[in-house]
Image 1 (tube, rainbow, N blue to C red):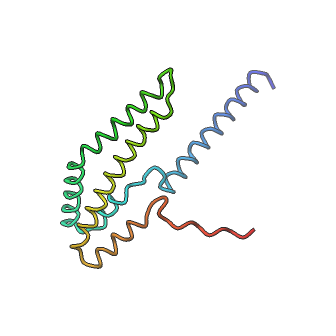
Image 2 (tube, rainbow, N blue to C red):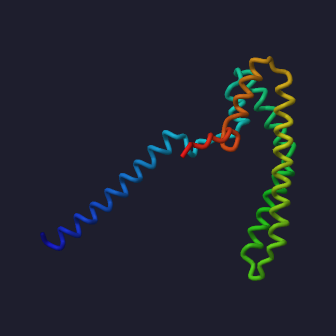
Image 3 (tube, one colour):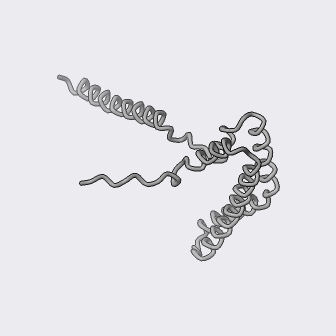
Length: 151
């Protein structure tokens, strides 16, 4: 077999391996829902009847708009941390302070949104609240850990 054909076959084999891997990875991600994670508040809205869904989304939008200062604070703190990262005189304490500021703003925003979800839920019938409880259990870090397999 000539050298040119051998190189062509090896190149084709390598290309096919990458294509099979890419297709397989795409199928795995699609079937496992990876990358399609949505927040639990969005899942809450999806289980509500249309009129309550509209009211819920309006309440979330109003709460988020009212907390706009927290969003801006978090963004500014992260931008400042990013700016500090690339300075020649690396100051870990200053970066940590900015990241702490960003985290505090994020937590405060989350508190407001979750408090508003609870307030909204107080007016719902038990059956609707059961659906909301199911949305709370979904997602990473909310599921109980799988039991260890015996060895």
